[in-house]
Image 1 (cartoon, rainbow, N blue to C red):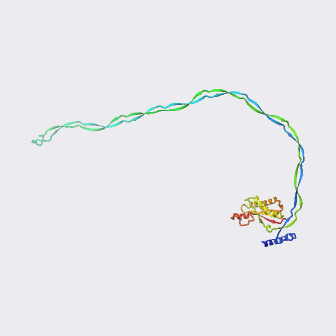
Image 2 (image 1 turned 90 degrees about the horizontal axis):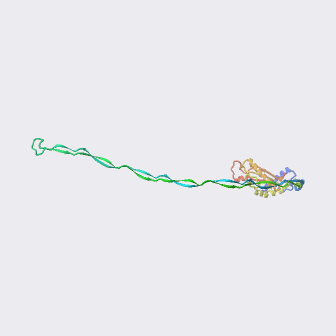
Image 3 (image 1 turned 180 degrees about the horizontal axis):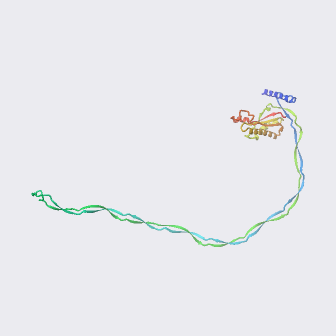
Length: 368
């Protein structure tokens, strides 16, 4: 590391010998680095009070003063009016026969019993019959030894089945009871009447404006106006170029560990404390510093360029607000043009790799 410092210092001195000829640090120490600085101008503030408007008089007029008086007035006389008292009614319930009692006839059908009737189909009669020849008849005449009998023939009958009427058809009455219903009716208790009501008079309020004090005037003196102006008075003229010894590491870009909020160029309180601790002590020695801000590749190139420039300007503005001379400061934004690793467009990277590209650095430079 020490050898690198010596080589860098040698190169710086060779460049200075060409660029500045004899205008080099006197008695430089080997291994040290030097930058050109300008002595600042010394100013002081003085306050000057000047009259910007003279004193004068003006007349102030005051308008007349009034008061409002309220009076009570009759707007309608008392009267009487008749009010109709309507009839008084009551409700009564009446019962009526909705359906009368009656009988219902039930038919009892005729009943029958089985029967029969014997009919003589052939009357009784008789016929003559010759008996058989007696076995002991000795006559040769076949008609001998016989006798005639008049044999009766009984009548013939047939039984015809019949159905006889046991009980003829009849009816049996049964009671069908009727029923009653009710209805309501309005019955007048008392007829309509009238009564007299007193109508009171009506009063209103009127407002009148009464003069309390007529218009008047007053003279007022207006004081002169003054303004205090602060002006800067040059005490010591600056611009003399001197050489200042600095740490060699500071001539290279040194990270300023500011954590910016996503898409923001506003310095947080933590970022301001880092600047106070890292940059202000260096700038109080009178050296010049270049502030550079970078982004990762996410987002458009245009938006990243604008964001980096605004972040570099935010650091510069904060340093100026802390009393640093603007001539000591240079701020530049480089967007995504100077990535420190492989994380270009189209390359998948971790959040840690993207964070390495989102950086703000500073380095000490020669003051022109």
